[in-house]
Amino acid sequence: MQHYFFNQPFTSSSIGISADDFGACKCICTDRLKVTIFCYVSQLVAMVPNVGGTTMQWVQLTFPPNVSTVLDVQMTKPDLSNPEISKSLGTWSALDFSVYTTPIMLDKINTTFSGDYIPQGTCKIGRNNSKLYCFARILESTPSSNTGCCADTIRVFDKATGDEYSVDLKSNVQKALKADGLVGWETGFPSHTFDLMEKDGRMYALSVVRFNSTNIMNGSYTNAIVAVGLEDGWKGSVLATNDGRQSVVMYRDFGTLGDSDTVYKIQFVQTENINFDKTMLNTTQNEQWHENGIESFETRTGVPLLAFTHRWMAEVVVISHPWLSSGPIEILQRFGTPGIFDKFGRQVGTHFFGVRAGEDGPFYSGLHNVYYTLYPDGRETLTCLVNQQGKQGNSAVYEFDIDIVQEEQENVVTDNYFPTAYTQVKMSYHANAMGGGRPLGRGVYIATSGMSSNFFSPDGTQLSGGLEIAQWSKFCSGSDCYTNKAIDTYSTRDYTLNSTMVAAFYDPFVYMDIHLG
Image (cartoon, rainbow, N blue to C red; front, side, top):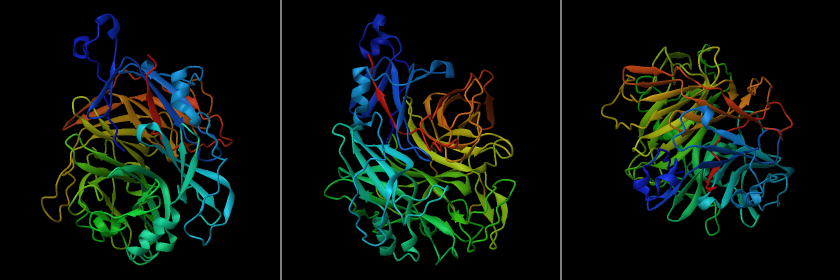
């Protein structure tokens, strides 16, 4: 989904208002032709329920457009007596996911309903902030685990009317995998998250999919992406990629089984007994490679790209857009520390793509989520959350510059092909799983707790999960790195309506900018 982000101060003369009324203003662009100047930044951020909760909560952030420290950011409960806030939230104010209308599923087999709507922690807001799209698990036959899988449905909530409807994802992603001749298609389920994509005026969900790839991966789970229609007239229809396939499959479309061409291809191994370097990843999961974040966006020059994250390779991968661009799918940028494996599945090395080896990498315990930002000066970045910084460390948010590189030669084995500037943000907690972050301004970030057992308020109270505001810790560009010597106090907010200590707060990407005058 596209995010235009303009947060630098303007001069009063440049926007045509008096200096007395100017103060600090922000430019919010809903598209490239519509520009509105707001003199205060207010965001309504959703805390989407996942483990142990069914009600969506909201917090309000208020900060100057040139925000530079944590202390600039106020985090409060939304004031529902304010007409603008009440209107902005509409029927989503205290949305109860446990109340739903039983949908009609395309696949009539294994459609026994669980009797409960179980939120899967991931939602997206559609065009004009009018519809909310959310992953859900409503079928008894849908696998359930604490690894982010699986969903079977997207629920759609209209903000103005309160109407809701369901889109059958399970049947359609399996249909797509089957149409592409993939053995194991019947094990396919939507997993972790999705992003919204608009093509020819139609809205689609780009869903991460997990399936058991018995034909290639010797029984290991692996991942794909499928585009499913969300609105009447094409609801539930699968949109083919530009090469005519029904799915994007990582090992098929840009993977390799070798260990000598793992820069512009992602390595896979033909064994389910993957032996990770235990100093880097504490996991026994046989999944290659646990995709958990996806972002569809267009650069400032109009180039459509798709970014995704996979936990056990601990990286962000940027590819040419399979649905919105022509030509073959190519890897254009990688950021992170993916492992290198021999043919027996033993980890024999680590790549350091864009990351300073030994100093900031390797990334431990994986990586989650990805978020695109366009700054006023044209800088474009992607932001992700590293679950553990160092062997005994807490989580960290990384924001890095988009610097796409076309493959120039075969069998490249050096890591120097994806150099980029990046910002590191050390968090006060360790997200054992899940979690995500995004910038509020240059050097100030908001992040979610994920599944954390050490998420505390500033006064030392252990919280069941929530949001943290943090400042940059270090910035690296080329051979130079700069450390922030003045980091302010972290700020948190409790995820109160969950009944379990581990709230599994997935990402901070569901939000609306509002103007309070």
